[in-house]
Image 1: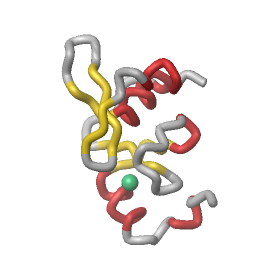
Image 2: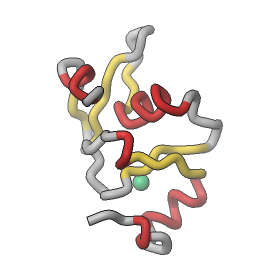
Image 3: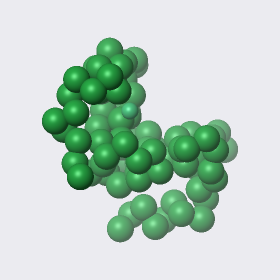
Image 4: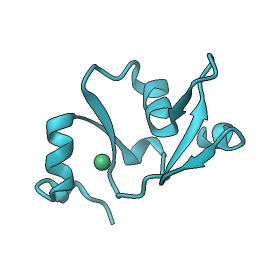
Amino acid sequence: MELENYKNQAERGENYVYVRDKKGYKVRRSRFIWEQHNGKIPEGFMIHHINGIKDDDRIENLMCVSRKEHGQLHRGKFYKYKKT
Ligand SMILES: [Zn+2]
């Protein structure tokens, strides 16, 4: 699993896991991994953790959503997407 490659670089902060990008900036590992698979995250979009576990950065747990959709997700509107 590709995630293993980032494990050593991972730093914990809040509930999220951060890595350093090429320039040395601290970025959320979820965003980093999503971008590895899908390219740049569009402006105003964020990466949601489908199972709600913020350090579970497997690609299948990540979902790119607009800020608005993200708010709805966290209010439970679309929790049908939630995997158990
Ligand atoms: Zn979220």
